[in-house]
Amino acid sequence: MSLGLAVANLGRVAWNQTARQWRHWRQRLLRRWKHARETGKSARATARASAAKARDARTQAYAGSVRTMRYWARVRQQTVPRIRRELAVRRELRRVAAGSGPILVGPWLSEVGYEVLYWVPFLRWFSDRYGVDRSRLVVISRGGVASWYDELAAGYVELLDLYGPEEFARRNAERQRAGEQKQHGLAAFDAEILDTVRRRPGLAGAAVCHPSLMFRLLRQFWLGNDSVAYVQEHTRIVRTAPEYEGPRPPLPARYTAVKLYSGGAIPDTGEHRRALRALVEAAAAQMPVVVLDTGLALDDHADYLFRDVANVTTLDGWMTPQNNLGLQTAVVQGAARFLSTCGGLAWLAPLMGVETVAVYADDTLLTPHLYAAQLAFRAAGAAAFVPLHLGHAGLAAPAPVAPAVGESSA
Image 1 (cartoon, rainbow, N blue to C red):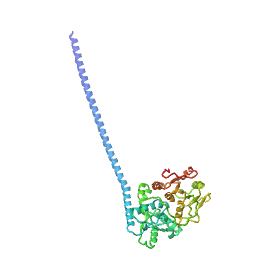
Image 2 (cartoon, helix red, strand yellow):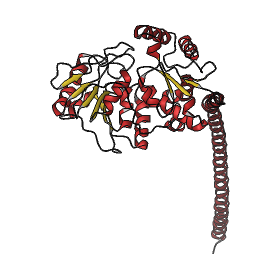
Image 3 (cartoon, helix red, strand yellow):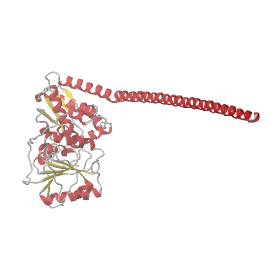
Image 4 (cartoon, rainbow, N blue to C red):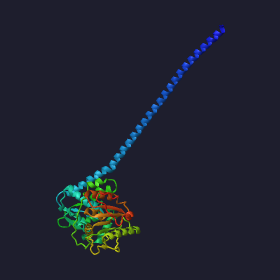
């Protein structure tokens, strides 16, 4: 072998060895670099995750603090005022119920619907809760409704004996225009009536259970801020059988009583009049109809009258200002069915055992009352109560038929 070839071989061996070493160290460096890069990525990911967790924790803490603040704000705005209001009303009721002297209940100057659905049940709760004997209570109302209070009160004062119908309507309208539509406070007219009644023998120092106590207690339910359970806690609605003692007109053995009037539930339009006429005609085709027309202008409601419909009679000549509500109650109580604008006596009829179809065209102001009434009727075992939207009246043929008690009326 020549020297040159040996040198070349040694050179190749040295080169190959050096190349292997270089590849070995290069791979090690690459692995270390990759490891360092992955470690860095992992560290950055961990840092980002930690930052996200910290951000989420801060967000949750902030949201929790906001929810807590809002919760306590609601407590301050709703619960605390309600508790204060209830405590104040209960203190006043305890003061009224204290002792053994007479208690003037009223005067009631608001709508019939509020009287039968809330005021009378509220007084029943008041008497039960504070142990007030009926012999102490003297009710002040209008329209001959003493029979509504028979079980609760021994005395009754008829407002329309104290004031003529025109004067009463005018003074009451003035009270309403002054901001006392719902008797949230003791208006000048209320105070005048109470002073007049207190001049009667034995009533000089009588305490007063004024409707403002009930309105203050239940107002937030009507505004949608309290539950119906709150109303149920402060009222007692039961079946009733009022005993009207005045003269009664001759009536058919079986008839439908009808009380349809204008107002927020049924605005006076030609379309509504035509739909109501169709309902009355359908009812009259089944049995005689007795229309509860008063001919009186004691409030802002006007009766829809269909005197020209066959098989329809009215109460002409029997109604007076002093007996109008009492007589209407007696006529409804003797009816096989009651067809009425939703409100007013429609809340009373089912509790007297009379199937009731309550008609409306606009339920904007009726919703809380319908809800409260239907729950109360079911609990009291009242007769069937069917709310009927006037736009759906044509679906009831030949006349609205009431379902069995307890069935849904939706």
